[in-house]
Image (cartoon, rainbow over the protein chains, first blue to last red):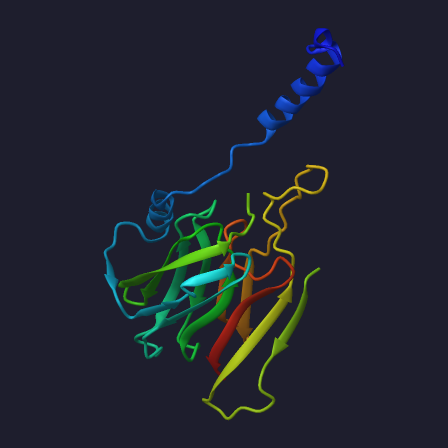
Length: 152
Length: 85
């Protein structure tokens, strides 16, 4: 094609539609740690969270962000008078800050849950446990994600 | 429909803590992904899982979509529960 036709009608249409297509891809939703804070606040309000009693296990290096084993355990006797009511998992960098919420009761023999989650980025994962007396305990772990889950 | 498999010990003494493993085959599609043609794949998420014992909810999980709450897009392993029979 000669120089004269560099900006031919066809070319303009080709490139133009390409640009339009790029413009139409929505900006990826990226959460910031503040979103995790907001999610936490929506669920637990302003109550203070004490560090400890919760053990959150996520591999320090997650090779596959699509499937990251996660294990939470709360040190609690799980009796009628002293048990875990709820455990919430938050992510700081996923498009949505909520990961999962678990509801437990005294009938659960142990406050332990294993599951698998998706991680969209190298990030900190938080776990917060609510006791039946309203006390909150929490912890967080960092995980480096080699292959991020394509959640966008 | 999601296919579910529950693994529980065949026998358990009263008061014994047993481990329940639930495996749900579900894509847990985030709704953010696109197919080969750039069309958005609709969101398909299991939102709630409940385990009842004699009508009483023993364990429940609320699962979130795009986030991450699940295993491989193929199946979900929501809880690896330990409970008291």
